[in-house]
Length: 355
Ligand SMILES: [Zn+2]
Ligand SMILES: [Zn+2]
Image (tube, rainbow, N blue to C red):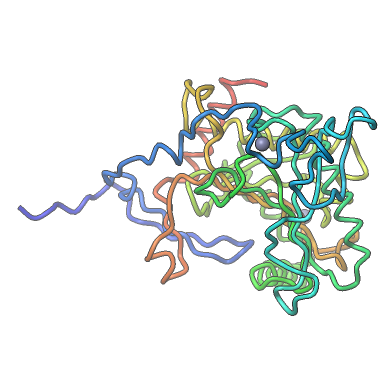
C-alpha cells in the first residue's frame, strides 16, 4: 500500500522571512509527525563529574607549573594570588586556533578561549551568577585589549555546548574570534540595519522587538533584557536576547555596569534552564545541559560608539534538529514547530519554575 501523505488539518507549510538576517524558514508542522528515532545523546547527555583528571581545562592538572597544558594565560581571576590553581575564570589562546594574526584576508585574526568555571560539570543552566558574570567581565577585558590592534575589525564571542554541537572540549568554555575582515553574513546583517535606518530613520532591532512583543513571541523580560522566540525561528528552540535599551556594543554595556552584567548573566542562565526543562522535562537533573550554540552579535570595533545603528544581541539555538540536504541546497531552513507555540510553552515553564 502506498504511504499516505500526512496533512495537518488547517496547517499548510508556511514561509517566513527573518527581517534581521533575511533568511527564509518554512514552518512545516507535518515534519514533526515523522517517526524519527530520538537521538538521546543529543537531547539527554549524561551527567559529568565535577573534576576530570584528563581534562586540560580542569584546575591543577599539571602540578609543576600548573595549567601549562593550555597556552599562556591572557586574563584570569584568582581567589588567592599565591595559589595558581585557585582561579575562577581563565582565558588563553586556543591551542588549535581557527585564525592566525599572521594569516591573510578572512583567515586573519585571533581565536581565544575563556573557561568560565573550575567545574568540569559547571553547566550554564545552573552556574553561579558570580562565575558567569566574571566570565563576561573577562570577555570584555579581552574585547578592549584586542581593540587596540589596528588590524582587528570584528569581534565574536560564542559558545558551543556538547560534542555534536561542535565543542571538542567537554569542559564548559566560551570562545572569541576577533577578525581582520568582517564576515559576509554579518555584513548582510549590517546592511539590512543600515538600509532600514536610511529609509525610516529608525533602528531595525528596536522596531523588531516591538513587533515580536505584539506577536506574542516574548518569553520573559528583566529590567534590562528581553528574551523572545523569533517569529521566523530557524529551529524549534531558537531564542534571541536583546538589551531593551538600544546600544551597539555589548562590551561597553557589560563593562560599564555590574548591575547590567549581573542581569545579563541571570537572563542567559534562565533561558538555558527553561530550554533544558522544555527538552528534558522534570527529570532534568539527571542530565547535562542539552546541546546548544550561541553567539553575541555586536557592532564592529569602528562602529561600537553610542550612535551606531546595530543593536547588540544574543542568538541562541538549541540543537534538537539537524540541517541536511534540503537546507544545504536551498539555503532555507525547515522548522517543524510553530515559534508562537514554543514561546507559549516556554512562558508556561517559566511560570512553573519561578526563579
Ligand atoms: Zn575539565
Ligand atoms: Zn535598537
